[in-house]
Image (cartoon, rainbow, N blue to C red; front, side):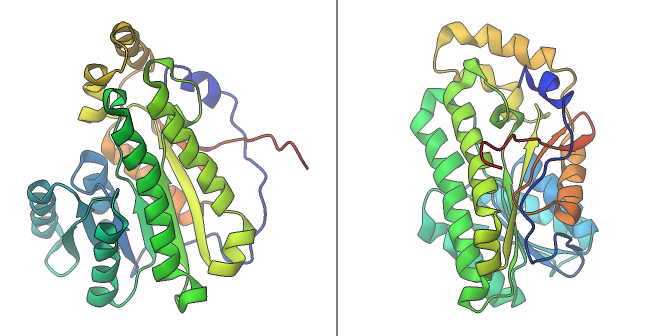
Amino acid sequence: MPAGSRLLEQQTLAAGHTCSYSDRMDPSGKVALITGAAGGLGRAFSRALLTAGAKIVASDADEAAGKKAVEELENQFGKGKVLFVKADVTNSSSLEEAFKTAKSTFNRLDIVINNAGMMRDSAWEKDIDVNMKGVVHGILLAYKYMGKQNGGAGGLVVNLSSTAGLEAVPQMAIYCGTKHAVCAMTRSYGDELHVNQTGVRMVAVCPGPTDTPMATEAHHYCLHDYAKQSLIDGIAAFGPLDTTDSVAQSLMTVIRDGKSGSVWAAYHNKTREIVYQRLVQ
């Protein structure tokens, strides 16, 4: 987070493994499942994908907020293009209901966006359950329902990390660790070893501080009281909070053009691929 601007000043395109599956996807006509869809980023992602011609399965643990979000989307984009499924990403069986609904309703599933997340180190076990286990559940279910080894047509998984997954964030150390894990899983599962077997590509998007309660209220959920003011100051030093719509535009860029295994920073209206130095060339 606070150190992210230094990291992004050093970005160049990263080299990665070449997979035999195309690294381009046109969202038009596709079906996307989005977790955490009732929140600010989830709603913005839904709007961007619907605008691009996709259909949406919106899932969230908050049923009332999820249904309200879908109602707003239906008012804007019409009925039959988006539906809500209550799902808890920390429970694989619960999340699987959203995958089943996507296949039974639209007869296909092309994109999975593991967006559900939280930044509350004061409830660090929940941090880990949502940010790490939730993403693992989404990845494994994507393999089950999209993987060619199970009769699927392949597809794309987008994992939401954070600029906190690119740098040290001492004020929210456990959250930071979970987001680093998301980047590492994306790079590992995005490798040709998996892609050539499953047909499922994987990318990660790392937003900076965004104008949502997760960022504006984060200092209330520090595990260590002495870190609160430092977190407030650090987020302020990052500059103006990004809008959810600007992050959604970065998401669309990565969906369309991101190589499997790539990790992308998305902040201040810029979308940049991250460099990772390989220990073994």
